[in-house]
Length: 349
Image 1 (cartoon, rainbow, N blue to C red):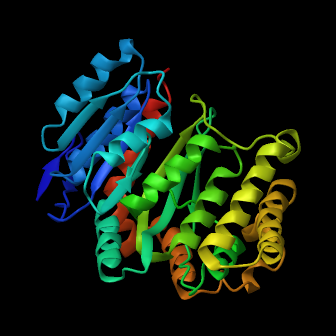
Image 2 (image 1 turned 90 degrees about the horizontal axis):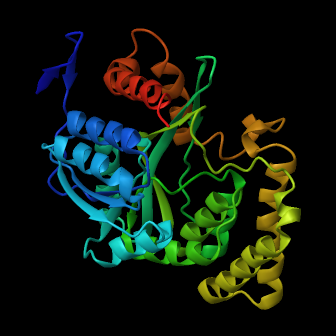
């Protein structure tokens, strides 16, 4: 099935499998971003079930409702929340209202590749020891001078048999596990923890460690999310290299949570749990003050880098930006949509 956009370019639509997990999109005061993401899903994945969890100020809600109403090919459950309600409380309330086993987490400025995530859902159904599944992520960052930077965020499977070993494997080359298809019960626990412990620069790391200790992490071929940033909007970023000193009590709180999890989930004694928790946390601190694992000298000799699935992700990333490759042909229409949306959203307030 295809439709046409303004320049006459045909755009192929991918019908979402009937069993595709619901997509949850939290939003706050960004109707243009929300409209871009909903328009993307409507164009490429009509029929998708979406829950929009709107925590916007009152003046933004009519615009959000308008972009929801515009996308009639989607099954959107629009829910309003008190603007004073925190993001994690909002997400917990949504998740606890559902009975679905699997959920795709989204955002109002990131674009899911739902055919890849559908493969992740099928993988979870066939592999009960796994709690989350995803492909790699493609990041676009638009700068004020018009420069557009593309970056690959790899994903490697974490399949060890014990929680402690999975935590160590994840920490070798950590990555964000947020935008994925994940078992609902894990998400509820994730956001309950996040409600009491959220530290910029450590959130993705501690979330990934918790996910890995809870169960195995699966990787399917392909890019499962396209994430965007622009020069005009604000984002939570670890710009302060000394945040682990300025907010040391919170870092120590993460350490204690690691210790508790290693004791309860894996049966480690207190001394061994403390030692491993320290080792894990120091890896994150080292990335803040020095270099991330994928930037250190000799990174190409590390175990994770040499995994076939990671090597394929790297090859596909470069192929997407080369002419006349199957990867470029397959991704081209979605990428053009995302980049145009990114440019347009960057001019909004």
